[in-house]
Image (cartoon, rainbow, N blue to C red; front, side, top):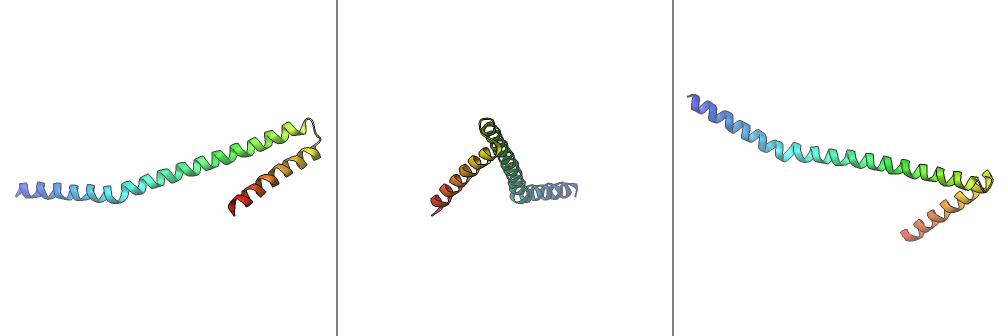
Length: 88
């Protein structure tokens, strides 16, 4: 009788391991990838923002603040226009 109990316990353990490998493990991997993607996007956006501030600060030295704003505006408008035209 104890042999049946041990075999039944092993069978249940195998079923649980198989169900977990089918359901929980891929979901955990997807959550990990999504979290790392959000972290990478946040760090990339922050780096881009700091780069924009550095460009503005570097342009503000030879130009006035108004000139630096105008040049950054022209650069961003040009980049937006390029991306808009590439979309079509």
